Image 1 (tube, rainbow over the protein chains, first blue to last red):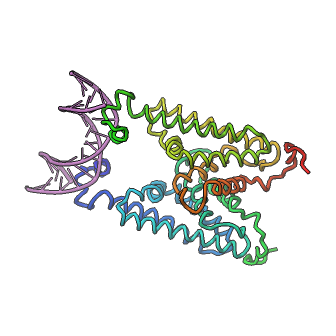
Image 2 (tube, helix red, strand yellow; image 1 turned 90 degrees about the horizontal axis):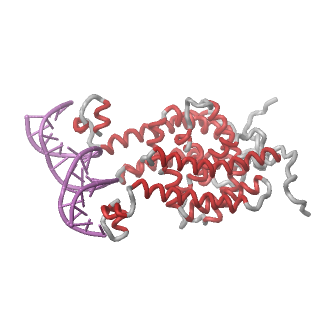
Image 3 (cartoon, each protein chain N blue to C red; image 1 turned 120 degrees about the horizontal axis):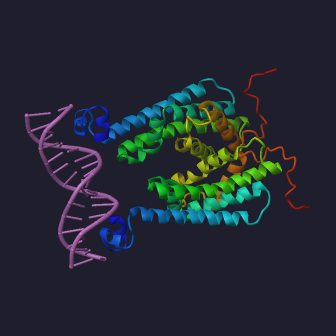
Amino acid sequence: MRELGNELGLLGSSLYSHVSGKSELLVEVIARGAGFFSESADVALADGGTAPDRLRRLVRGHVEVLVDHAAEARTFLDEARYLPPADRRRAVAMRDEYESRWRQVMVDGIDEGSLPADLDPRLGSILTFSTLNALIRWYDPTGPLGPDEIAGVLADHTLAALGAGTATAHLAGAETSQKT
Amino acid sequence: MRELGNELGLLGSSLYSHVSGKSELLVEVIARGAGFFSESADVALADGGTAPDRLRRLVRGHVEVLVDHAAEARTFLDEARYLPPADRRRAVAMRDEYESRWRQVMVDGIDEGSLPADLDPRLGSILTFSTLNALIRWYDPTGPLGPDEIAGVLADHTLAALGAGTATAHLAGAETSQKT
DNA sequence: CCTACCGATCGGTAGG
DNA sequence: CCTACCGATCGGTAGG
């Protein structure tokens, strides 16, 4: 708290005139992070297309949030456990709501045949987020891979991992409008 | 330190007759974790076979260490950054040595045609460890998935993610002894 | 291995 | 928003 106060040019104790305590600040940062991810999913899912199409856009949006709002994203993903129980439950609910949208796309993909019938959406989403969220630990925006490149690589990697290329595809293409 | 001492039936301060400080203990736990992973790779790579064969055994061994030696594994993977610079460098070197053995298998797979030619071993190993190491955060050994099942699922997932099934395979099988 | 401490740090409060 | 504090916790030390 002293550190945060100093960054605003005042003492740590002075912050308590504006917030009830440390966890109120944490809740706010976490909610902001949740908002970024949620809005990203809104955009990614607005346009429809096959499940792999939508997954690809979800991955791109997710990676963008991780890169462009790294602090809030990291706090949303990693720090919820330090919240008092009631607030922690709310944070977990936000994350679960976001993840459920990914799982729904996986279910759609299984139904339309663009994803393997034996894919478990719950496990698939856990493993996907495992891979993507670890970006926070190693990605360096000033490094050789730009945000766009890494997003593309991760989209390919994620679809391959879920078996998007190898599905039976007995109905694949049904959702896609006829192209030349 | 008080907590650790109490677990041994003595005071925190008494520990300083046996260790020089907190970071000495951390170094020891990290080295133990590194040892588990290193021995696991020894076993996994002892038998040869195609790159996907060896990767599958590496994944199984890695998951076993994560499950059977969760505390040491977690400490090795997550806590090295809290070490003083010199010790931290040693810990990072241990991890890099282990990861280099995975990268070598990926290089072999590219050479033999069992893995895609455009696979980047460095990126491939980062993404693989991202997925596997996240187990620590969510896997519950008392849950529905047993250690063996989860290891199998993760091996399949990893090979698919690396494109093991979709490689050009112009040389695939060259390493495999002739079978019926 | 214990007694008795130290200095630093932390979230937070009373009272103005 | 500051002054002046509190109680708790932490890694660690001196001296026996």
